[in-house]
Image 1 (cartoon, helix red, strand yellow):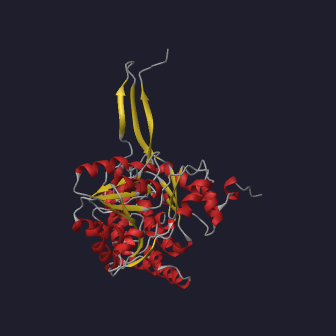
Image 2 (cartoon, rainbow, N blue to C red):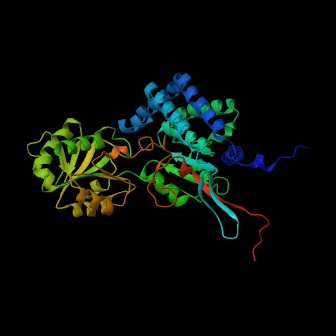
Image 3 (tube, one colour):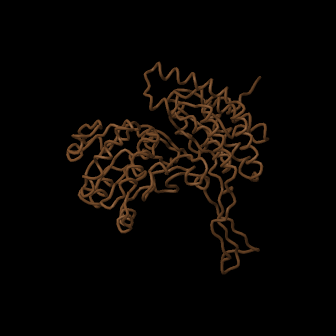
Length: 428
């Protein structure tokens, strides 16, 4: 008579989580060199098997177009040879980064002679729930592998073919390097039940990181029993101060909004000090028009649009809270820097805000008063990015305040433990 083990009766998602837990235990003690070798193998394999990935991605794109998906979402879904080379380059950048595992965060010899050290250790099993961004599949796998974590990937059904092809490449490269292939897995299933199972896998999955729109993030935060690191939406602001360099302000505005509008660090709202508005707004509106951006303006912005080439519509309350992810921007004239801060505090998602000014006093006050993960002075909002910050690829941009905040690189994928070393010490 055949006896079934408890494992045989588990759902596919639970089985995957158990395999990931075992892989995480095997990864945790590995030296940096072994992990880096696997990452280099991943980068090479991505380039060698680019055609396989592109063919799979084409199926997702075709299905998305048939479903009437917006071009903004399709842009986020699309993989090209150039983008795959960039993804492989990001993986190699991760190889060059220091391994955080084993780093001594603090340490001392206590008065009683005990040696106390707090060291970084992997989180364990990291679950990623994300939307139509297949590049996240590789970024997450690379960062988790380097930091000694196993990863369970649950992408959206719209990128199913792409993610399946990418994970196949990743697992082949990892296994060929002698590391456990189960360190990287796609969560089985393509329906919401598999997502719910992942969110309920407390004790098997150590942390969940959602990446996507507000609805996805809210659902994971509210329904998960697994601890969640919240990556928020990007309602980012550019404030042009009374003492701004006009040419600089135009360049920063257009780059923040139009360089790649489908990403979370693109600007969604423009705020202009009333003293500079007469000189700045006519030029800004024309520049936005040239970039193909529709402006959702308040009453004062509409007044400057009469002789402009821009497409300007009246802003509604909803515009101030909207993450467009498209060639749209909300715009308002404000009476002062403090009124700009008030607007940002009311509507921001806590991601990134920028000020353009030649006044050090204004810059200092803005950075002190604005509470977002990143505050940029005379720089585009588009710099809020793990790669741009020198972290290598990022696993997300956390807009919460516990454990991690801002672009999450390798250290943010670790926890710590204390190592207490004595010489027969007992407590009296």
